[in-house]
Length: 130
Image 1 (cartoon, helix red, strand yellow):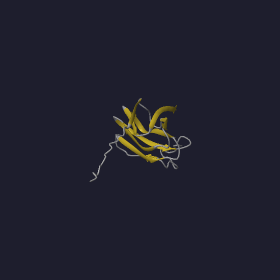
Image 2 (spheres, rainbow, N blue to C red):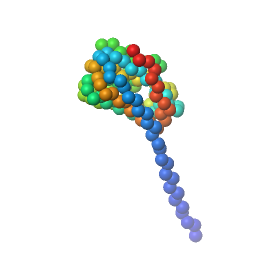
Image 3 (cartoon, rainbow, N blue to C red):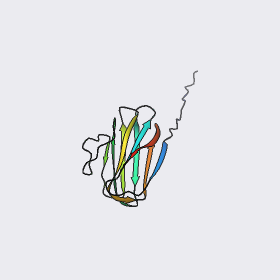
Image 4 (tube, helix red, strand yellow):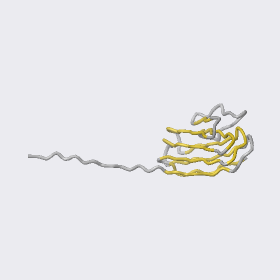
């Protein structure tokens, strides 16, 4: 007589989280971040909140997004232009192991916080501020 054996393996995936506080910003101010991943970026969730005003998110690989007239014509990874106090981007996958994210003040904003969450998120660094 043989006994069937079922083995259950539980794998706990840990998301890595990085939080960045944003200083108050006047209209048209841009803050650029470089997001680095362990391998191609996948399932990266980005959540921006402001206390007042309006800030938008744009993401692109290879170079920082170019914002003109409060818009990015070529931002295939993310374009979040909600007019409320929150914006989100969900990056399902990218070709490379990094991408650029720009926070643009569509209107002056105060109290900005941006949260990056992802399984293979390595780090987020401030790339440029102008």
